[in-house]
Length: 462
Image (tube, rainbow, N blue to C red; front, top):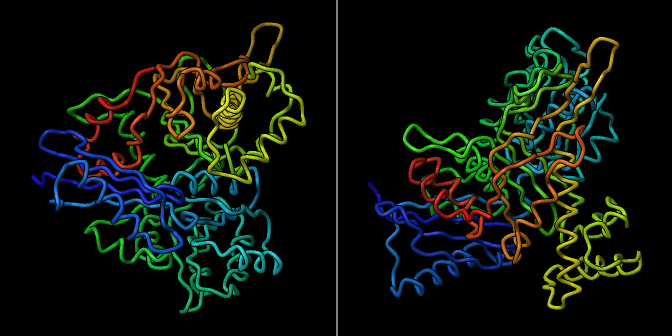
């Protein structure tokens, strides 16, 4: 078995590297540097390997295998299109986020020439087109294809809609346009199918996107496909949750990642917990669910976080009373200086408040809702979305959580407040204190038992 495995995560802000000793199942060394997007990602590679060599006291590194993930250059950008916002567009969004993409915009109803102009300006890496259950509406998806073939660039289009119009779709695409036809993301009302879409997206990312984003030299470092960083994190969460035949997992779990621009939530659990009799409403949730809240960030999105919250919510979490003027000026300071590090007690308190709000609002959007219908004889409960009440573990990651003196205090804002919101009730809290989730997600795709044992050992129980 190979012994030294180098795991690389090229992020938009930081590049992380971990050197793993497979034989002894330990992290030999770790390095984190700012990503050199303006020059060359290979500069970041040289920096992290130099740090690792210094840490180990060696002049050369012996590396048997290298695994890579990346979210540099804006990540894997997608436009999602569906027949209606409530159903197929929502299904497309769930499928796309679960595959590690960053959604630029979601369209519903018939595409227009103005929409095509906008997509040209957005310059997505891939387009996911859905619409119509199998045997259902056919006009919508055919109209969309007829518009998408007018795009200026050859942007890969994944068609995952009504399977009965596939022959007509194939006739509409000219030879110079790249397209993929796969199973319907929603073959029946409220039934979600995402596995095949995820496979195609990974294929597109590796075959096309790494070359479009200047990752060619990085690709030469490895004999294995480069995957999007969110995919690696979701893979790590799934492995931690389910375990392997040899190593037990943690059970149903949630990962909360609070960053400078977004707050991402990953959940590994069934939609319905089975602990309460409910009538399920709406589109079913994927077992592996990811949501990205682009208005809830600690730096780049600080103003939009303020706009999404209320002054009352800021004061609910603050140790000191905050007025609107103080809140706005503090948020603006973080937007204009994304590298801002708080030093005073007031600024540290404000960062803590922002983090608790980001966690609170992000989990509120990710979790499902419960509606009680009362009759003279009994109460019925209707559930929409995912039930997170009984998850076993909640893991926090991201700089503000990892570097906080009391991360458990931050994560407590994720817990259930009202019966109607299906948020976690009593999970065990963990911190990804060594920034290992994304890179160990890479390792887990090849050596799951070892990756899981390392993750369980390195996660810090709070």
